[in-house]
Length: 196
Ligand code: DHK
Image (cartoon, rainbow, N blue to C red; front, side):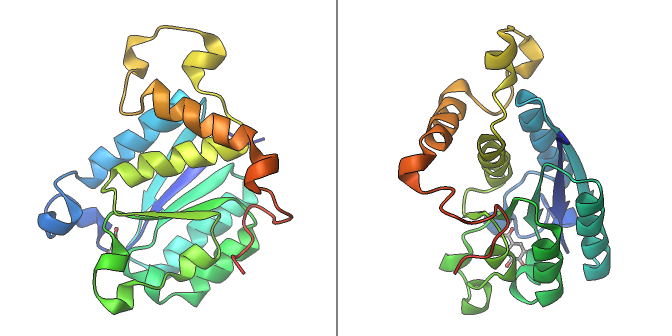
């Protein structure tokens, strides 16, 4: 299995840190990409981070993830989340576990932000946790993939692994996934299956 997670950011997310900081916070896209790389590394995974302001290029990234049989996709499609049937279709075609991420709480904002085409093609959605949502998305994917935290798997005490993700939530995520018979997490759906 590939150990690469594609982390895709859509339009205007290159402006993170300076764009409406009261909504999107002060962390930059570079901060987000480092957070993703550090979190993925904790699970023995690699984050391949891309950003584009163009819908077609985002679709090409999803096709690339499909062609390379990536482990999964974390995607914040920005404004395209609310408009793009083409991105939805690309994710369905990819048949990879995908997580729909939004920095802001899209349900507490304008009505037009409340619907996400991406969410319909995703394993799950995370919004409202600021850029920490990317970390939570990777943790969720790792749990679904059965990827153990590197410090548990290798029992090492590496100083540089003491990044944003702490042992407690990681352990919880793995425990939840391990209890899937009761939680219904695999209730007959493929990982990328749209919600009913
Ligand atoms: C980012 C955007 O650019 C908006 O168009 C979405 C999303 C919300 C976010 O919260 O990350 O509506």
